[in-house]
Length: 147
Ligand SMILES: [Fe+2]
Ligand SMILES: [Fe+2]
Image (cartoon, rainbow, N blue to C red; front, top):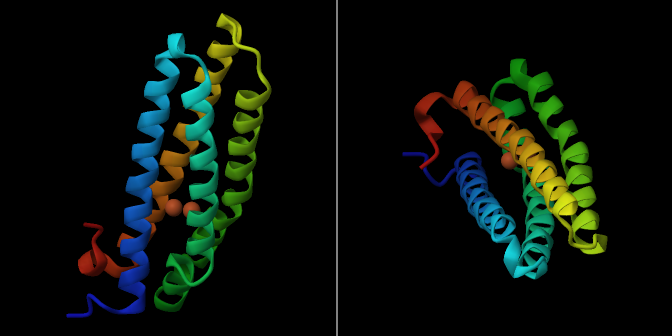
């Protein structure tokens, strides 16, 4: 059983971080829906998310799934590269949302904007994470299925 191989460990780290990010986004969505409580909780959560996403992308790029996939399945290299390149634009989207939350003055229009930017970010990120998990499945089959 190769469950302790570096590749397998990096995939399980990836899956755990994906789950953690999903949970944080669920909390952020809930905080945005409770707009009556003010932007304080939203501000705190977006700071945490910005930090975790950055760490997550660094893990993926440095010794994470990227290396493992191109070693195991070089044919998937360009798809893996595209996903890694997408990190910069996702980080930019997170940063824009963070700035909007921090600097904005609460109003119905401002909350609407937060909601729509958050939805857009969640969509891009969930598609990105799903594509990564698909890539791992394609490269390793069920060998490293996310648990
Ligand atoms: Fe990624
Ligand atoms: Fe990821």
